[in-house]
Length: 198
Image: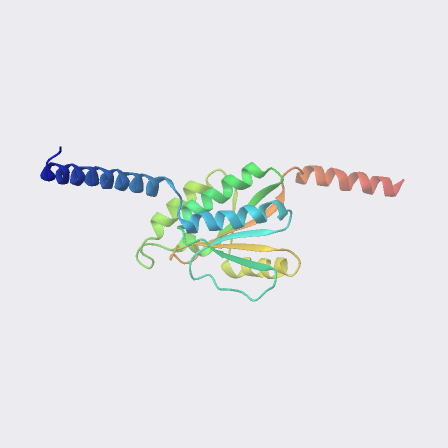
């Protein structure tokens, strides 16, 4: 027969080891499992991606980017920093194959420095790191908005809002056909023109 004190000690030790193992599993799962916000924005984006094509736009924007009234603009609040959202987006676009990105950034970002905008150097370095493999076109902020205004009247614009609080850090991506080139389009038009002239 086991002594009552010994039974209590065994129960306490068992409880201690079980609790410690549970905590270890919880910590491990926290490191590996994405947050709800990460899962949600990716889920919505992956649902939209097959529907997006030539002349659609995707924007990865800072936190103060305005909610717009145009019916063609959809906003997803990622609740994530700009760099991982932009990196994930570009990797997904590259893998999709049916579309390719034309990238625009604000010209104003090039003129910001730490004296008037603390944190801008780190943000600019993050953006340059993610965008280094792509040609980048820069425009004044208002010029990009003019392009979006025209596009949203006919084509869907998907906005991925991030937690960035650096002004002019938004990245504007115009989608182009991934399996058709400008050169091929020009050759086609030339051929059509020649056929008309005959």
